[in-house]
Image 1 (cartoon, rainbow, N blue to C red):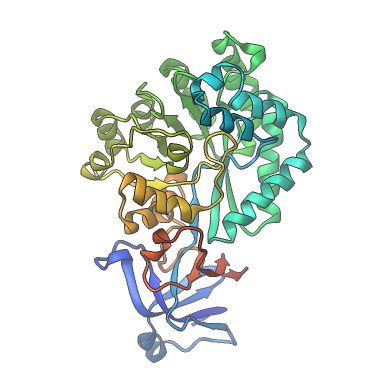
Image 2 (cartoon, rainbow, N blue to C red; image 1 turned 180 degrees about the vertical axis):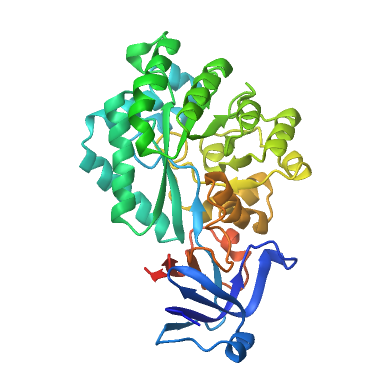
Length: 405
């Protein structure tokens, strides 16, 4: 058997759907060849059946746990400036919506991002990404949406590309031109969408894998969102949606009916929307950091999502205004404590279900033969500890495509 890396004596959290909780295989070995998982199973069986060729690197886990690399499937990691002052306003009683209507919120970040150089955006985002990588994240999504003009949206997407080329992490890029209406188009949302669906999307299509839109009262209505999705699909791009965060405009239902990869936030999602997501295989991405940070009280309909067997993913939503978070482990804890997910559901939410939300579940998200060898070793006594601890990082080794980082 060809193998460049052998990980022995680990408790392997496969997340592969087997009957055991977490898909757990105790006292297991994983062999890696050409960046892919070549063998996974009991260590004694491996020793009896397999004779590796060559001189592979061997890591002895000594009872540590090995999971798939974590996936942060919803972030806005590239931005300029800070919005700590707006956070302070909210603590004094000003609502998120009111700040946005006063020209703050997303638009204040747009001003700072337009003013920042590509290198400044790169360096700031790199620090955020390295924080995530240090806690086991091997794949993440980055959205544009803080440019709201062609030049800056492209700048953000190119920075996302450069980050993926310079760091040992897989980055998926999402064009979010329909994030907000810029100041220069105030009161003219449809005319702004002419730009988004025309010049912007034409320029962005080679620099992204998917297109998102903010379907909300302070964003875009249902018809406007449909227009963005029609344009995206005409360019051969997959779609995602920010929906039902502050109200129910049925954005998730629309996106699902158009075979969206995911619908995200979902605090105000109703049963009809859940049923449509289930019918079309759209993943529900829950964002507990934003729920916590803006003092939301309406919780996502977790029981309905369970009832309809909708895959539930968890992400940081890392952004300067409503979720300045760079810890996916913390989001797992919040998903359990705030939304009442089980620790196993939370871990699925940042592995196999997060992979589905990016449309890459055939390659990553579980530990199975033939999949990419994105693996994380944890110094924990049980898988539940990954969602249990607050502020503690048990990550010991990160492997990306078979390479020890």
